[in-house]
Length: 152
Image 1 (cartoon, rainbow, N blue to C red):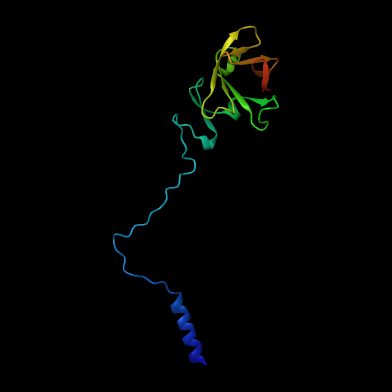
Image 2: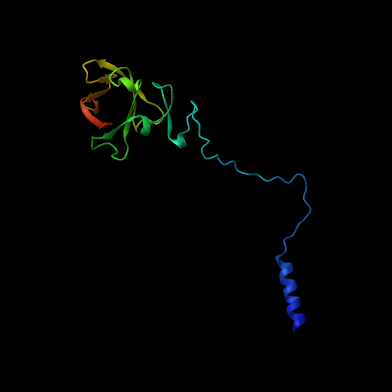
């Protein structure tokens, strides 16, 4: 009985052993290249995975949700879960200079809006879009239709 158990145990252990044949130098293992997480630099060197986007008016990588003014959708035809953002060329003088508009419908670009009038309230536009500021509330319109609105 002991011989049978020992013999079965020996056979079981032998069956678990992997076979190692002769390997040649021609054996190659192909490894699929997996993109490195956080290695997604755009053409300006901004890391999208860290929330950075290139700003033309700042000439630098910015995080829109930190430096921009969030404009929430007001038009019911727009996706209500995604905001637009506005970045000012000069944060100290919000009513002066160009503003950069980031719309969720634009994949990798932004729109520059130039100041239209200096009436103390701030108005910017480019022919298609009009951004106005009144008492701290920013309103973005297209063809006199309010699209987004928000403030600091």
